[in-house]
Length: 230
Length: 92
Image (cartoon, rainbow over the protein chains, first blue to last red):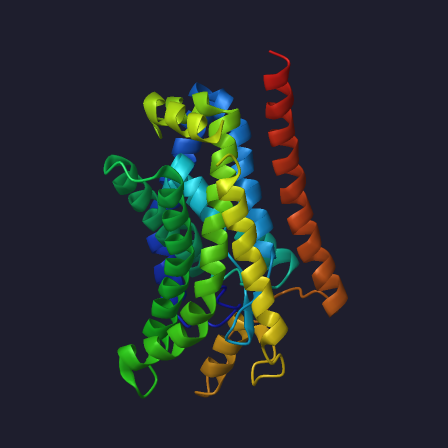
């Protein structure tokens, strides 16, 4: 999903910077509050960030014959909300833009929006809706993380189609980019969802009190989840 | 089912990996990156990137090194935190 350096013409790269900025600013504000008021959640924050590091560095092959990578932002978004996930995504994207020439400084705004904000927002909303509806927790986490991954690539396709409508217009260009990005991403999104669901299980077992404190799961659900695995 | 979720995830990964035993790897994309493919599609319209990355890994090996480093940093943190939680649970 990385739009490479220089591949967004003006005014698009400026626009995406402006769109991402308020989310990142709010994310930094939320992070500050978290660090001050809920220090016990910091290890979990580190895990969420580390997940983005690991998963976004693994370029996996897909059945379309090309390689792409998962995003790993779903976990952070479920645990801390999309704005904090956006800050985590920003850190990884800066690392990749500076050291790997993967993505770019000028396209950072657009990449942060797709991977750090839009995808995580989907994960966050699905998780909230799923838990409210009383759906199976791990199935909800799976769906949230997998669809966040997929949606990230859909947003990248939209961003590129807006900047390069070509002769086919926005819709035609979107289909062309989505054929490259989103189709390749389907199996990877499923794998990512499964892995994050598994990690969520370990968090439920090792640190349920943090999930309760972050208001993510009621105590009764955690009891039930622990019993079924006992 | 104590390990139901683990079994499901491992099965999924094996199926995912197994697909590649049967798939022709020499397809037209031959496992290139999707990011690069999109860039080619854009360049085919005659677009020239207006700025180049100020630094690029000098070779594919060094790029792999840096990607591996990125994954390693993440893996160390995950392992450390989960190990810490596991141990502190056992001690209480």
